[in-house]
Image 1 (tube, rainbow, N blue to C red):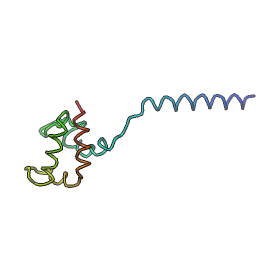
Image 2: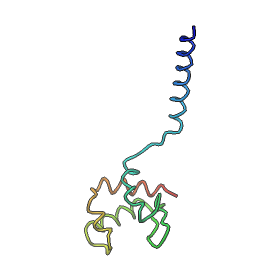
Image 3: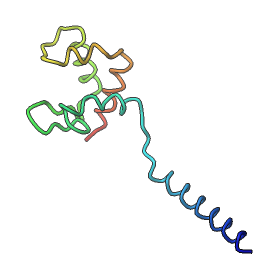
Image 4: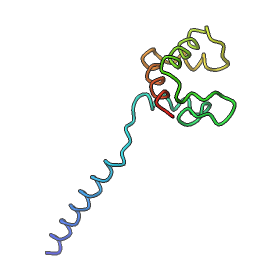
Length: 103
């Protein structure tokens, strides 16, 4: 009887905890993953803590164009050209979409 009670208790706990973790789960998108490389300079979620420009809430078009210009070398930069060269057009668009949604 005691073993049966322990199994029932264990099942209830498993159901309870697996149900609650899905509520607090955060969707991790590719845009979010790619945007992590920007956080050191532009701040968490694109909100810069200092002299580097904040990029949160900017339009997708503006951010995509800026990154593509940095990558092509047609927009002056110190380090952004080197960073942008590592991204494809698709990745640039994912990053731009992510930061455009950050308020």
